[in-house]
Length: 261
Image (tube, rainbow, N blue to C red):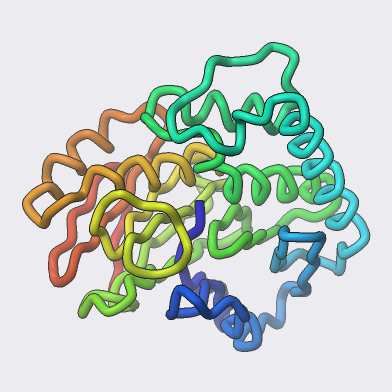
């Protein structure tokens, strides 16, 4: 949960999170410009989204946020263990849709369902808006779910690493809609048990991308773990590919195209 990206879209669109963990103002949003899409922000309680779409959909976005928050908050009231578990939970056939997806996505990757919450919310809102717009980018604290009519380049921020911001992931139209999420032990407020400056994962499921980034980050205890973590990541069903950076070392895996930015 929580990620650190810049998304280049046309001229370009940028999204990410502040560099210092204690700094929460999302100043990167002030640098966004796009002649082709309308960009706006919507916040409901702790959920603070930045979006781009073919038109302004603030009201519709707010309604979707209220809907998914209602699902989560109602479930948590009757299942108080849900937000605190750091291990996978058993599936619940009576859970609301977003909770089912979070439990499903994290069921085999050794993290609790809340590790996927930001990506799950981003996808829930994006999917709802795609009934009203052909293109959408939803950023939730840096975790992104997107669909566009042309390729996007996602440039990954990795804190103090000398590789930070130097490389990006080229996202072809054929892979969209797509979740692009990450976890970091050195930047932001994500809970990580490892040392990675950033782990970035791609999946058609926003919840899976988010949860897998956390699970992979937890496994990076030292630089020499990168190759083993990349091999394990390549076996996770539903993860298309990704990258991990520790200091001046990077590993990649899966169906990705790495580009200089």
